Length: 149
Image (cartoon, rainbow, N blue to C red):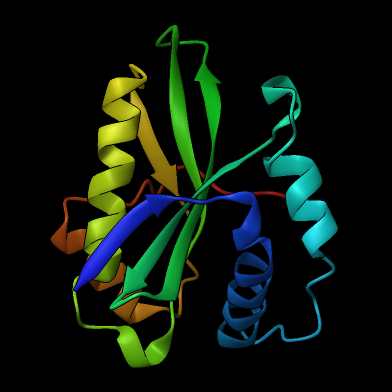
């Protein structure tokens, strides 16, 4: 049974584990520098103004199996906030149980509640399964926009 909930400070260790699993999936296993201290400092600060992200946890039969880490942006053209999904990841053995769909539905509810004009994310061009999933839930590929870093 699936349960989607807001992340708590005690989830910091699981969040880091899932970030590392995501990095391995994305063929960058040694790229993660994030620690539990970073997660606590930047997402669970006593002063909400110092929190840079929020996170949803996905549990399957009581076990943490996925997460969605997001933050809010602002559209100057729309004059409204936006929700940016930084990472969504489900452990491979728990895929095909509509867990990602559940996380996206919850993110959509949050975006609507906050009055967001958009929900945005990125996907690697080789991740065909994710691309197919995003298309199935109505995601649109913005071909004219290119990401730079």
